[in-house]
Amino acid sequence: MLKLLVMCALSVCLFLPRAEAQWRRHTIDASSRGADGVRLADVNGDSRQDLVCGWEEGGVIRVYLQPARAERQQPWPAVTAGQVPSPEDAVFADLDLDGNIDVLSSTEGRSRMLFVHWAPLRDKLLDPDAWKTEAIPAATGNQMWMFALPLELDGRPGPEMIVASKGTGATVSLLMGPSEKSRRRELTAYRLQSLYQAGWVMSLHPLDFDRDGDLDVLVSDRKGAHRGVLWLENPGTEAVRQGKPWREQRVAGEDKEVMFLDAGDFDGDDQLDIVTATRNGVILHSRQTDAAGQQWATTTIPNPFAAPNGKAVAIADVNLDGKPDLMHTANNGGNRMHRGAAWLERTAEGWKTHDISGERGVKFDLIQAIDIDEDGDLDLMTCEERDNLGLFWYENPTR
Image (tube, rainbow, N blue to C red; front, side, top):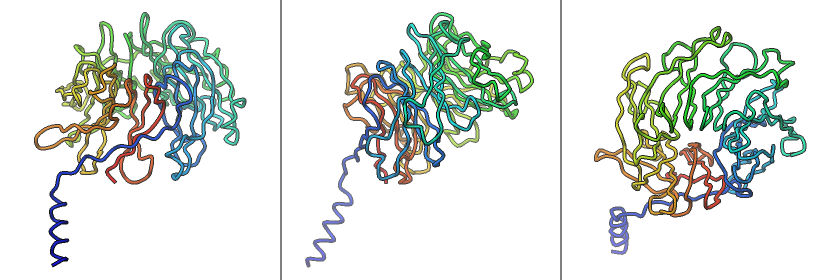
C-alpha cells in the first residue's frame, strides 16, 4: 500500500507545473564603473577563452584570464592593461606579431583615439607595469571610435583592423599597418582608409556573403541618413593593398534604430540569417534569398517582455532541443518589468519568452553565448552599466 501511495505521489509530481529554473549571475569583475562590452580570445595559450573589457566611466581597459572550471563562479584574475578616457570597445589582436596578444581600444567623447595596449610575455600578463599603451596618430582626434574588428585582408603578415565610429564625420574604415614585421610597432606608419560614411556604428561582423572566399564585413548603423543593416564587399587581396573601395550592399532596417546583431543559419534552410536588436520594440530577422547576398526578406519578432529598447541579440540553442533560440539584452531605463536579459524559445505556437536577469540591471550590452561552466549548454556573458553589475555571466540552468 505504501509503495502504491509513493508511486501515485510521484506520478502527480510529474504533471504538476514547475517554476522556471533561475539563471544564476556570477560576477567576473565589478571593480570599476561602466563596463561596456566584452570580447574573447585565448591570450595565454591554455585553450580557455580569456576576456577584455573597456570600462567607460572608469576609464580602464581590463584583461581577464579564465581560471580553472571550479573557480569560474568567482571573480577572475585580472589586470588593468591601460588607462584611457571614455573607452567604448576593446578587442584582442597580435598587432606586432610577437606571439603575445595585444589589445586595441576605441575611445569616444573628447578623446577620440585608437590605443594599442602592447602585451607582455605570458608570464607577465597580470603585471600592469608590463603593459604599454600608445595612441595611433592616424586615428587621433578625428572620430568618436566605437568598435573594432581584426581581420587578415591583404595577404601579408599581421592583422588589419576594421574600425568604426559615431557622430559627425563617422566612418567604417580600414586601419593598415606596415607589412614588415620589424615595423609593426611603428604606429606613425599606420594608415586609415574610409570605406563607408556612417552615423553611429554598433556592430562589425565578418562573413563571406558572396561566397568568393574572402571575408566581407556586416555592419549595423543606428543613426543618420544611411542607417540600417548592410554589408561591405571585400574587393579582394590585391584591391585591398591598392586601397580600392568596398561596395555597400543593403540588407534591412532603414526605418529602425538598429543595435547589436548576430548571423547564422537561424531557420535551417542552409541560407544566411541576420538577427538584429532594435530600439523599436522588435528584433529584425533578415533571410538571405540569393547566393550573392544582395536579396533579403525581413520579418520582425517582438522583443521579450515588450522591452522597447533592445540592445543585443544572439543565436543560440539555449534549451538543447536542437532548434535555434534567441538570447536578448535591453536598455530599459527605470522600467525593470521589461527585464534586461531574456531568451526567446521558438515553439509551434510562436515565440515564448523566458526571464534571465530578473529585475537586477538596467543597461545591458553585447552578448557572448559561451559554455563557461562546461556543462554542455550555452551560458550568457554580458556587461551592465547603470546598476554597476559590471562584467558577469548568467548560468544556463538547462543542465
